[in-house]
Amino acid sequence: MFIATLVVIIFVVVLALVVRKQNFEKNVQKLELQSAWGDAEAENILRKAGFSPQKRQKLRTKAFENKALLREFAARGNTNAMVSLAYAYVKERDIANALAWFEEAASAGVVGAMTKLSYLYSPDKDSLNREYPSSPEKSFEWRMKAARQGDADSMLWMGHAFYNGDGVARDSDKALKLMERAGQAGEPRAYLDIAMLYYGNPTSDTYDKKKAIEYNLKALNAAARVEDREERQSVYSSAVSGLGYVFGGALLCGKKDEYSDQRKAAYCFYLASCCCDGNLRNTYLDNYKKIGYVASQTELKEWEWDAEDLKFGI
Image (cartoon, rainbow, N blue to C red):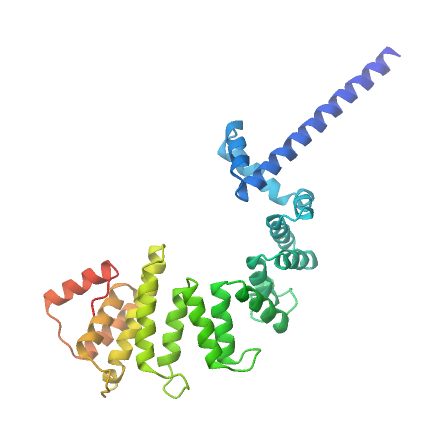
């Protein structure tokens, strides 16, 4: 009798310890999720706990794999949990639940979930996501909702859709307005795309070299506000090369028009070549040489300084 009682006591103690450990791990995982979602208080508690970076990483990974815990947060309306839960199902290739939770988050106003749904429903998604059902109508619908929420990338996407007539009646005026809004919302490449629409096709209803100059200059101004150096340089080189084609496009064909300017074209193509490598650099250098303007060594050095500082001097 004594031994049986002792066994029961030991079992109860061990069970209590196991439950306590499980509760402890669950609470730590909760804190890791809250910390990952920007809760400063949760992060402060975890730092005071003294876990090593490796331990923290393991705990955070487990937390994001804990669908039951994510569902607890999601049930309380936590949109971060909804998105995290959706991605957990994406990882497991559970299409129905992934779409359901992305839609739950999107319906709650999460723009990232809207754009993800647009991509997953798109017929143009990559091979890794081919198993998701294609629906151009739903893809367009979610992009439109994201654009209405002020998402710059979605505004640009919608602009191209209206310009090309993809899934909607072609409307170049609406396309240009959406792209303009995308630029104003912080997407400098929108200005590059507008400039290309104004210059890329001489037979289009939007062909206008003056406007092409205006929007390449807008792209240059917007590039100055891009924090990432590589991205800033990419926008800069695209804008100056675009200006090079406006000032030198006719000259490259042995012709001349009211916008032709040898020095400006040479300057722009040389700046663009300083910011690129490979075939693109060679193309801009070839254009610079074909323009026919012979820059002095002093000019070239000044132009190189402009390119280094991502400045524009005309």
